[in-house]
Length: 200
Image (cartoon, rainbow, N blue to C red; front, side):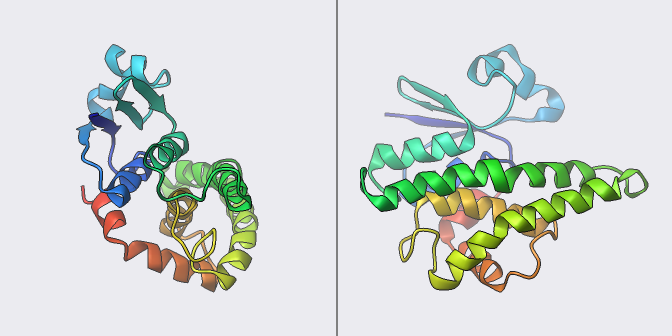
């Protein structure tokens, strides 16, 4: 069954690409250029109603939202996640939703400010976003002091989603004072699949 991922480099679409690379699945990468209006075309809006990426086609399955695609791919292959119905699977869901609801929103705000000319940045909004991001990262610092990955010894799809948020925060210079998270980010950046997922 052919897999096709609609993708823009260095966006949330790197998350499902990372999962595809971890799983070793063959897939077609359909790169879109927002500057040419390719994410606003009628064809793409039929895939993703807000004109965002990623979007995935997997035979009869059409799905968007990066974390949902990551979870779908892991469940499809029965890999990168604990067995259904176990306490570890409950924690997987917890950290996936936590990443989307607690880690990511302040990063969106920080990114929006970073794109502005320096003279136009709102220092109050930057400080608020940094504070919220660090508060959200603190529980993960405690978890990752004890274990190499979010769910313990085994890398999982939770590490793709949580890790991508932490790496994003690090790139915005928002991840400070958390040595366990710095070490975790360094481990993730050494994974060959992560390197392939950001190759372009």
